[in-house]
Every structure is written in structure tokens, then in C-alpha cells.
Length: 350
Image 1 (cartoon, one colour):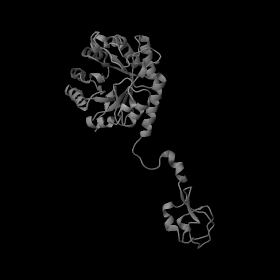
Image 2 (spheres, helix red, strand yellow):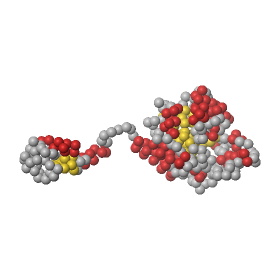
Image 3 (tube, one colour):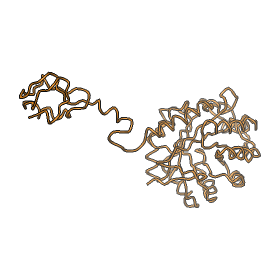
Image 4 (cartoon, one colour):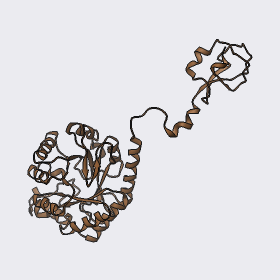
């Protein structure tokens, strides 16, 4: 049984609307005004939340020229040191309370991924409604326990994690006091290829851990998250930028405002289409039902004449007897004269 998850009195889980998170990440380009515009654009596009990241270069890594601390060949950030990348990408912490006020004034949730324990303390001072564990930090059990001890709901991304590592993280969170946990299926490639998303893991993970499961998506476009909703994702997180023309470490795999709106609209349509288990005639089908096939007299008949395949046929519309009675009708006699085009009924048969 999958439990529900609540953020600011918004229920998340099976049977509830998908919770859609716009991930700002590094798409502020070190400009507060751009960050504020991004928050407003996320709300206008229909997102439920905007997510930040709370770290500094020094809380993430150390400054080093060693190749151990550089992105390797094939990476989107090939040759760049971790310290330099995080220096370019991090958001000044003093912006974050101000951005939360802007978001909350518009009815938009704002929270952040903490990457170390000092960031958790900072976000607690901001009174964020939920804590987020990044895929790369799922192995940092002390950090997960620190978040869990706050008593806030906890979202854990699972990119690269084995089933055993996910279980270890969830067990640690519960052991430290977390009572509301959600997991996000994730592929931590940037961008992620659709062929490696393995979305069927989502219902398997939900069944195995009994918690809401969503998708943190790094693919290009909006098709994959919509497909995720179709297989049971309750949360969608997607990197978001005002424009991919604005320089940013994350711009290549981020969607723009018109794409986020299209994603939100597509998810809401998918939710309606999923509906419920139902058989029979829907409201809009009622008028179409009459155009089913039924038995009609297709040649003028005299009283006492035998019904044959030449004078009775299964045709549209559906005003006559159901076609399943054709064998029972053939060989019997007409009770009266019948005109061609008359729907066959039992009172026509002697």
C-alpha cells in the first residue's frame, strides 16, 4: 500500500494530481533578478514548486588541480574542475529567503536541496516545507539523517543508486524520524538518454517501499515525464530556465517557460485520460451507441414469409435486435408485412 506525502497541505500520491517541480539549479547565472524572474515564470507556467540548490564550492569539494577533481571526457563540463563549476553554478545563500518570499506570495512552494549539514540548518531557518536529497548524496547517510531529524517530509532522488543503497537510505531516514518519504527515479546523466530511463522501475519502487515515487528528469523534451505519469509517477522534477540562450552550466538540459507550460498541460491531460477502471458507455459515448450494428429487414416481406440471409442483415444503426440473435431469427416466419428498412423486433416474428 503506497502512503501519501504532504507538502504545505498538498497531498501527493496515487489518486492525487502530479506535483510538478521546476528545478532552477544553476539557471540564475549569478543574477538575483534572473532568479526572481525564473520563480515567477515557473508559477505562470503552472508548476507547483520551484526548487533551489544550497551549497558553496567549499561545501561541495576542495580547490585542486588534480585530475581527480575534473570532469572527464564526454561530460557536458569536460575539463572543468569541480570547484570552478560549483563556483559558477552556486546560488548565494542570502538570495534564498527573498526568493522564498516571492514564491510564497504567489502561492508557489519553494524548497531546496541541501548538500551538507550547514545547508540543512540554513534551510531550517528559512522554514522550507520539505527537504530534498540529491542523487549524488544518497550515499551520505549522516546528511540524510540530519534532514530526517527535522521532522520535515523528505524527497530522495535515486540516480545511480542500487536497490540496496536506496533501501539503506530509506531505512536511515525512517530510523532518524522521517515519517513522510518520497523517492524519485532518476538517471544522473546530463542529458539523460530516454533509452536508459527504465520508467517501469517507478511502480516497482512504489510497491517495494510503499511510498510515492516520481521522476527527476534530465532528458531533453517533455515526453519522458508524461510517460512517467502514465506509469504512476506522483512527482515530476524538471530543470527550468528562462532561455537556453542564457549562459548557464545547466541550460542544455533545461526546459523553457513555454515548454514547462506544455509539460504541465500534457500531464494534466494524461491524468484525465488515466481516469479509473471503468467498463461500459461513457457520457460522451451515449449518442454513438445507436450506431452499433443491429438486425434490419432489408427487403420488403409479406406476412408468413421466411426470414433468410437475403432479407435480414446486420447493419448500422442499432435500432433492431442485437446481431447475436440472427441465427435464432433465420428460418422463422414474419408475423406481418414488413417494409425494407424496418428494424427487426420480436413482434415482427411469428
